[in-house]
Amino acid sequence: MAGHLLYNPRVSRDILTFIGGYFEFRKAASRQRFSQEETKVMAKTVCKILGIVFVLVGICGFIMPNLMGAHLTPAHNLVHIVSGAIALYFGFAGSYGAARGFCLIFGLVYLLLGAVGWFMGTGPDHMFNVGSLLMLGKVDHIIHLLLGIVFLIGGALGGEG
Image 1 (cartoon, rainbow, N blue to C red):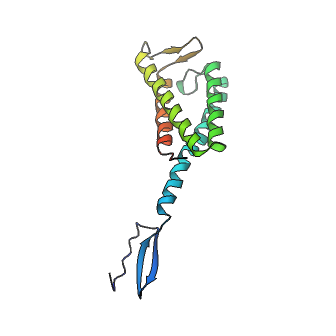
Image 2: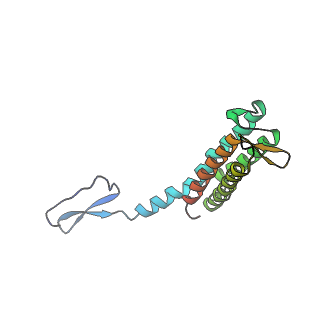
Image 3: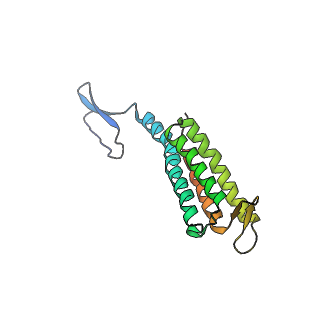
């Protein structure tokens, strides 16, 4: 394109170079790498955020057992605190690949728990008991489904470690 200088503001990582008497835009070599680095962080970020949420919900569950309409028994609260601690470990100290694996596994577990509870639960509140310690109702199932989706998205976008 001799004599023409084109600029596309949507392509922000292009580099303006002067070659052979003409200015020319070239793609930055680090563009793909930046995108991969950005996605690697996704799984660790999901682990950090949801880890904090899990620990807080676990602690609050001891004070308010019907928080947001959920059925938070002491055993359920302990599961949240342990899950949150594990998520925080992978978010802060684990590798990208480990955080991604955690997100994918926990995403599947929570998605399955929400779906099984919803479809196998009985009564108008879809009550589902996991052993004799955990009682899960409609609100619990919806929260588990949403958590499963968020964890799976974090794992799917988590990149390779």
